[in-house]
Amino acid sequence: MTYAIIRTGGKQFRAEPGKTLRIPSLQADAGESITFDEVLLGSDGTKVFAGAPLVSGAKVTAEVVKHGKGDKIVVFKFKRRKNYAKKQGHRQGFTEVRINDITLG
Image (cartoon, one colour):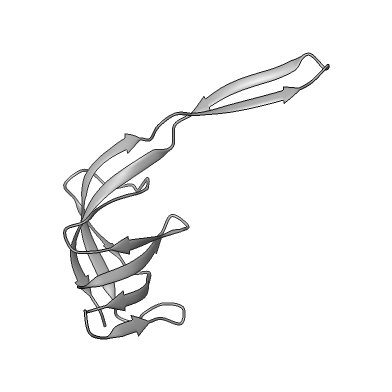
């Protein structure tokens, strides 16, 4: 089974062909093809390619499926006996991508 560990948006994701990932928001339109060059580790099913820190010549191509916002989280700040309470909501944006191809050096 071919897979790769990629880094985007300050986070790491395991990418496999045909798999859909929710990654931090990217500036790309839906249907557009994008390439991830920061491949940290990859495997073709028999051999494992480990980078130091990146695997040279490796890349992962994906197609943008959609953009959206995640579930709402509530940020509540409170200080007792000080008449201070602050409630704030947040929805983090994401980009959903479908992995098409993995090329390992």
